[in-house]
Amino acid sequence: MANQLSQHLLKARVASGELDSWISKEGGFQTFSVNSAHNLVRKDFEANSSPIFCKLWRCKAVPSAVLIAWRLMENKLATRVNLSRRGVLVDSLMCSLCGKEEETCTHLFFDCSFARQVWCLCYRWLGVLVVPHFETKNNFDQFRMSPASETVNSVWNTIWVEVVSEIWNHRNNIISKEE
Ligand SMILES: [Zn+2]
Image (tube, rainbow, N blue to C red; front, top):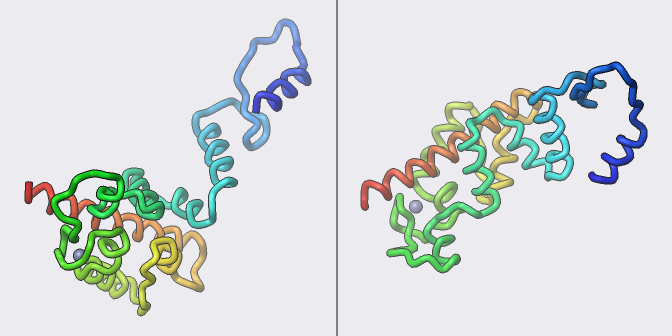
């Protein structure tokens, strides 16, 4: 990056009598804007991300929901099992919603009876019949309309992210009421 900058500076034409100004290479040399900087950073970020994460970053869900979805995909959410793996003392490893299985990400979001009901209602609402995948990224990838455009599927991605976020928020509300 520093090398590229010094190369650009060496090629720069310095004209006397002209005021300096910020310009952006994004979309042809234009006046610098926060939006053009955001697009530049996003493109660079997406170039180094997997297609699944690119779809996640592009969806229109609220940022807090996208963050929860990303942490779920990376198995970084503070479920009881994940907390225990990190050495945090927890009262129980069992699921906060059903109490019948250990609270892993897979169980909480896809296998728990509560989550199954939520996804079942979503699929019914969207008018599709599928056997949901239990692996997070595959489940996300599966939640789409096959013949539809990427724009339509971006809406589906957004719905998936919001549903995941609401399951996590519901679980946290249950825990906070118990305390
Ligand atoms: Zn459960």
